[in-house]
Amino acid sequence: MPAHPIRCGLIGYGLSGRVFHAPFVTLLEAFKLQAVMTRDGQSVLDRYPDARIESTSEALFAADDIDLIIITAPNHLHFSLAQAALNAGKDVVLEKPAVTRLADMESLSLLAKTRGKVLSVYQNRRFDGDFLQLEKLVSGGSLGQLKHLDSRFDRFRPTPQQRWREQPGEGTGIFWDLGPHLMDQALALLGPPIALQASLQTLREGGQTTDWFEVELDYAGTKVVLGSTPFEAGPMRRFNARFTEGSWQCWGLDPQEEALRADQMPWHSGYPDAGTSQQASRHQLSGEGAVVSTDDAPEPGHYRHYYHGLAQAINTGSPPPVSLHDACALIYGLELAEQSSQLGKRLNWDYPGG
Image 1 (cartoon, rainbow, N blue to C red):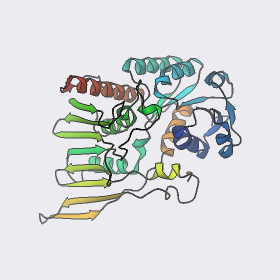
Image 2 (cartoon, rainbow, N blue to C red):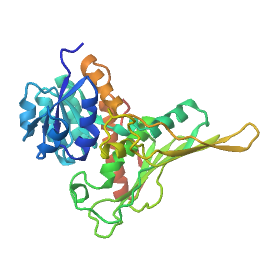
Image 3 (tube, helix red, strand yellow):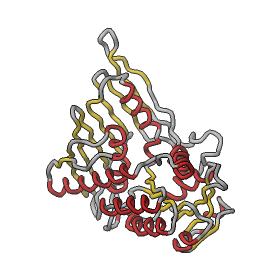
C-alpha cells in the first residue's frame, strides 16, 4: 500500500478542472486534492476548503507535497506545462487534446518514459455509458458485424461565443474540442483505419474557427463517420450503429456532465440523476425474419474509472487508462484529418501500431 494518497496539483479551475477532475480526485481515497493553481481561489475553497491555492504553475512543480499534476489550461500551454512537470519529477494528466502536434506528443511520451513517470490523457468519453454499451454490442456480436457507424456530438450554438476556444489560435475551434472525443472512441473501438477523409468548415456568420466537421474513417468492410454541427436544434442522435443483423440508435449525452455542471457531485446520492437520461432503441432481426424494436437505453457510465485506473498505474506500474501510443495515434489522426480537409482528398493512415 502507498504511504499516502496521490497528492494532486490541479492547474486551472475552469469548466474542465471544476467539473471533470476535482470531483473525482476528491471522490477516490487513492487521491488528495492538495493544491490548485487558479485566479479564482475562493471558488475552490468554497468546495474544497483544505486545498491550497497557488498563483503559478512553478509553485506546483517545486512543491514536495505534490505527486501528480493535472493540466486543464488552454490547449496551447499543454506541451510546455507537461514538459516542465515531467522534468520536475511529477506524474501528469493532460486534458484533451493533449497537444496539437504529433512531434510534441511523441516528445512528451519519450520524456515520461525516460523519467519513469506516468503520463496519461483524460479521454473521459471512453467511460460514457453509451460508448460502453456500444463496445459490448460490437465485441459481443448480438447484432452481427458492425458495418456503418455514425458518431456525432451536435449542439445548437448558431452564434459564435466570446471565449478562447472560438478565437483564432493553436488548438482552438470545435474540431480540436470535440474531435478528440469522437476519434479516440473510434480508435478504441475498432483500432486504426485504413484511410480517412475529412471536411472542416466555418459555417456560422462571424465565426473565426472551425465550427463544423465530418471525418470518414475507412475500415475493411466498415465505414465510420464522425461529425459535429452547431445547428442541431432538435434531439441529438449520438450514435447510429448499423450491423448485419440489426441496428442500435442512441440519443442525447451520458448524463454525467449535465449532473456535474448542476453541482451534483459523484458522492451525492443518486448521481448522476440530475442529468437527463439517454434514450436508445435496438432493432434486431428475429428468427422469423421480422425486425423487432425494443428500448435499449444505456446505464450511465462513471468517470471515476479513469482515475481508478490512473491510481493503479501510478501505484503498481499497471498500464494507464490511456496509453502513450493511443495518445500519439490520436494526435496523428487529428493532424491527418486537418491535412485531408486542406487537400480535399482521402489520405492513408500510416501511423505504426502499438
